Image (cartoon, rainbow, N blue to C red; front, side, top):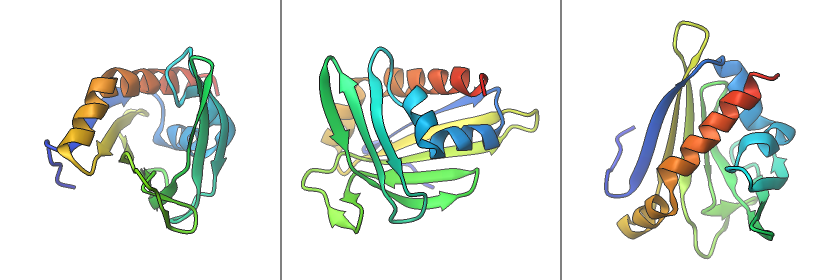
Length: 154
């Protein structure tokens, strides 16, 4: 995948948890609820239909307000890659104002851990900048830390 620095944000981190376990966390609603947004915010609902075109819907509580996000999976490579977007909801219904497409990759590091890469692709440089200004690196980095800590408890 060729990244475009004007529209894409990405980071890679090594996590001392197997790709299989991180995959389970990302593809099981009860696990997603444990790590998917930086605390003290929380995921209050998660629906997953793990197939291309299947739903990936979440609801968050942020500062006492509920935010919902409807999306779909675009690509699934078992224990290696998840691609999802809010550009469509289930049934390929276009979203009126999509924000991003996310790509989460899990690569075995050869020592029982994972090289974890999260990428957010945006429709414009302005959308990318908005996401970066919202705290992409801190937010997604915190989520990766929470994911690692949670996965180690399983």
